[in-house]
Image (cartoon, rainbow, N blue to C red; front, side, top):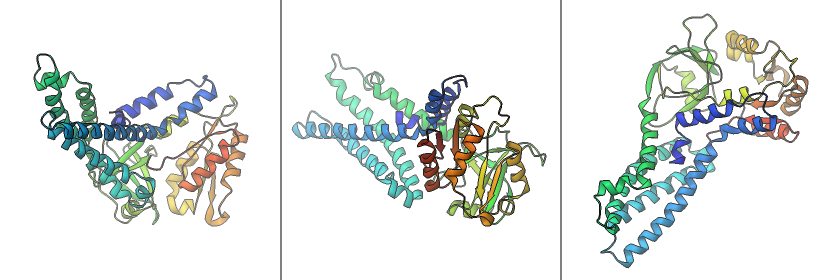
Length: 364
């Protein structure tokens, strides 16, 4: 149940709501901790591994009891237990970091379909075990009455509701692509307005893969309001998206806001600072790659944004420049979105200097 809750959008958003309810007047050490809320994936994987270990032990005890007295214990209970253990092993094996990075599409499929099989099997297992254990009660109740008296039934109801609620929000939306260059495309959505920093997952194959992006409000006067996000060439899906711009994409409607949580909890600390955020953007040929509108959006967010063209100026020393900007702005925290290697380097470089730093989570 806990494992599924930490992948359910309503519950995750509730965690963010609680975190950002912390006022700016609260001590920095508290806000630094709360801004780590986007690491909720650790609760998902930790609870999942713990549950698998516990269930393997349960299956071993059930097997031992069945071998000792087959007439007393039901075979169906044992069989469903082994099906569950098999699904759990598939999920854990596919989630190993090495396999997950190398075969990410297969990981998503194994994780999703094994999870669904496990959930359905859990219901069968609960009914079989209720039928088995009810006979030990004084005046044995019916299977249904015994079942609803067990914690398993209610935790399964919550787990099943999490899955149904998420997939029940699946919608297919019109997409208005804006090709920026051969390296990037901006996808616009007009079905609702959006505040900055919210996250949205989209897919053209919802049963196989999902991709998360940070949204940008469409308030440049180019048409009806809505929101958009920029897709850069960073893999098979993004490359195909740029080469063949989609006209429709699926989403699960509800949005999460990991970037907003950090930005609300951390800002330049000086009351004299007029800039709520200081931007440093390092990318090859930013104007050619992303166009005037994206450049204008960056400048609107921070008129003094430092935009570094790596084609002209080479690769910057990100740790040194970031630290320089932190000192100049008296910033409370740093947030970086980059590749895994550079993200780890900058986060370590800032935290080793006593500065709160947060990096993007790569498929947490």
